[in-house]
Length: 207
Image (tube, rainbow, N blue to C red):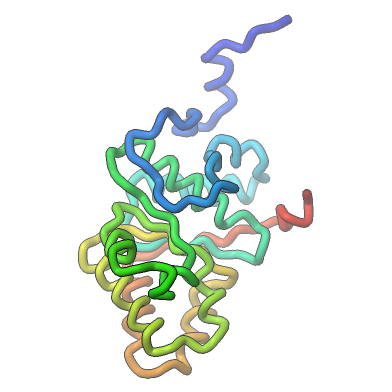
């Protein structure tokens, strides 16, 4: 029976993809389904095109700035990748990183003032499924909350990961018919941003 040494294990991983150590910080709000999301594990199941995207995502989260857009159709693994990046981020830093569903964030009954403030101040925030909400008409209150969150993070240079089912151009198109002032939302999101589009086949239908 052969034994795999530590050197053997590390040789199978890309540089910087050693298995996550015990976290130095913590991830808040991450659903149980994504609690074990891991960059090295994702790499094992990715194809060549996805590998390049993962490398870009890892480089971003190791020195995050502005907004990272993770884009692609339903089931392509955007949320899993975002969760893996959050876990990688806190593994090396004594900070809190937060995961939040856009629908809950913009509902004041689901996300109270104290929790909303924590999202504004989080060292790194994942805002999941942004376009799900923008598919419908946003109320003035929802638009105000979205702007407040993004403006606070932008003003204080706190990085944000946004997952959505389309690209940035589609986000701008859907916000265009809304009341004046929404351009500020786009400006805060896109002032310093990177777009990564997931490719391949749906991971949900492949299971």
